[in-house]
Image 1 (spheres, rainbow, N blue to C red):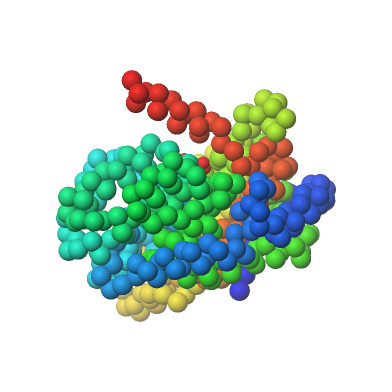
Image 2 (image 1 turned 90 degrees about the vertical axis):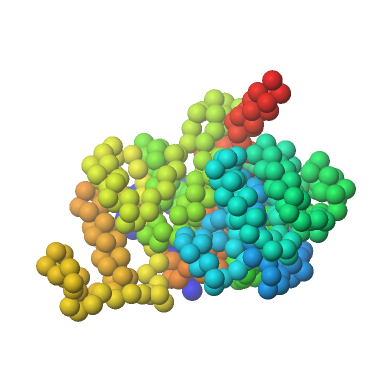
Amino acid sequence: MKVNFNFENSGILEDKIETEESKLRDYTEHLKGVLNDNSYLLDEASLYLPFETKFLAESSHLAEHFKNEKLKYILLVGIGGSNLGTMAVYNAIYGSLDCLNSNKRFPKIIFVETTSAKYLDSVFKLIDTFNSKEDFVLNILSKSGGTTETIALAELLIRKLEERFINIEDRIVVTTEENSKLHTIAQKNNYSVLTQPPKVGGRYSIFSNIGLFPLALAGIDIERLLEGAKVALVDLVNTYGSNPSLRSAVVRYIARQEGIVINNQFYFNPEMEFCGKWYRQLMGESIGKENDINGNKINNGICPIVSIGSTDLHSMAQLYIGGPRNILTYFVYSADSQINQRLPENLSLDGLVNSIENKSTVELMNAIIDGTKAAYTKNNLAYIEVDMPIIDEYTIGMYLQYQMLEIMYLAKLMNVNAFDQPNVEDYKLETKRILQG
Ligand code: PA5
């Protein structure tokens, strides 16, 4: 079962697409080579992760070690590339309101990412309800080991947990780059340590220990996730012309040249919102660049936004349809009807909205998305459709991998470095300078 991309309404002519695609033949050959290279020395090294057995084994093994009936919460401290992928998969699989299933499914991941006093207070109150140290695992994730928010929050959580329990070091797992200062301190403090290859940047790290360990511990089938990711990579090897990552990159590139400066990932399954936020980082950091790879000033990029259907149709559709024509929209939808509620034949709220009696929620959503597409077509607005047959580990793994591959292609077309983020470092350094007084 594959994630299906439909470019029919992209508004870009086929011959233009083919011309740009042909420029990427050499790069495709290079990427194919990366799939056989487990040295993790190349910029695109993350492409090897779905085939890597080492991280799968390490993460699964450590997760098995911690799994027991008492384990209720995984306190996950990390930000940006160190937590967005995990949030994307976790929310897509368990749903945005998983917190309401309070007595049903454990362990739950509690994401702690920014130094908000109110948020942290709620986490502290949750910790106050813990009965023993077996109720939790604290997973601290930082590739660099030097991110202000992550280290400050980890410190605060360790202090709080130490107030409640003794010898908590065997409940702490640190995931970081080998040889970071955090790695050294974690070992000294007897925490468990998982490593991340230096060449795998945060936004490409979901299939490394960064994502695999917390997801496995939360009960997500990480082998299926990686199996799905492999499908996107097999497409890279076998189907040059119709490889969706390649085509998507080319369509976005041509659209950008034609003045389309905004990319709207429009999800009609709200549980996929964090797939959009993860992609926002991937696109934003990878191609939003001041300089091209030769150091020439370009100040280029595409502004990625995320919309949720049908909610945002009631707040943003006026702008999207009537406003500036500078947005390329990806409608992402799964009409999976495994869970489906049906309206009654005889409505209590009869006579208000026509033709909803006896309709299912999936039928309603199908009508809304078809109506939205029809409105776009009527207004000559381009869109791409992404059909998720179902939302599970396999399809989400495939979807995320298609997008990472796409961004590598897009950066190549735009002649920018897909793997650095020099301007993010600017803010990090300035924050540290201010804290030093
Ligand atoms: O992509 C990036 O480099 C950033 O978003 C980082 O992922 C984020 O700043 C967290 O960095 P680290 O994992 O080093 O704590």
